[in-house]
Image 1 (cartoon, rainbow, N blue to C red):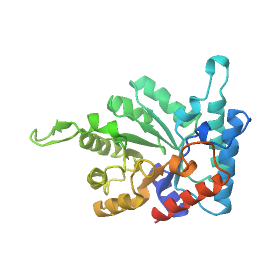
Image 2: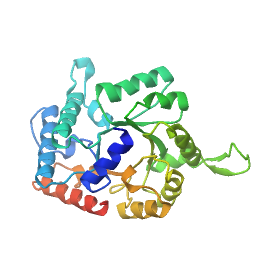
Image 3: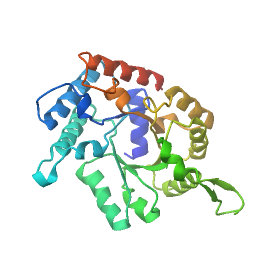
Length: 293
């Protein structure tokens, strides 16, 4: 099954277009003397079990590899963070076996190095999709174009500094008259890379709805999946995102609206309160309702 088909099927199965980020922050987990791996595994196990009991699921999951590997101490032969990621991926296979997993690692290097990073994502971690930087061009990006796998290329990101380069004006290469933002030039490249390959998509932030709408209109009808961060703690609105994509004629089932800390630790700071699980479930239910199909 192609990655595009998996997106459509998981959206139908889950009844929504939510992507749940899984980024552990030790300082907000319940207080415990347990080892790092055990704390993270226990936390997500309890959360996933409750989600299954209530019969709810997002339409994708997205662990950010940096949150896990930063907990390793490789020179002391301590790989607690990486092993915690293994545990989380295995929990996802148990509780949500048909839901795609996007490994957020934002790779991109010269061709041979990208080949190794692609093997890391797809062969080692066995992810369904990966995030990729476009800065080094096609020979850096295309090694990630595995059959039946997906990639999301950074297009217009949700962070404030994204404008530093992405909003720079560039000259249209065809008529050499029109000027448009660099993120639009990247979107045009993504469309070309995706043509005939299926599964090459874009990361487009929710924090600027007008830009999102323009990009969605470019991708409409072209089977370019979109990963849309910035909802929740970064200020984006799921309902605004959906309205913009509908107006652009973009197929909602190919998009995934991501929220991470807003779902897994909505209290933001300090150790988890006693009702942490109820707070998580309330936040998850709210976003699933807002982004339902």
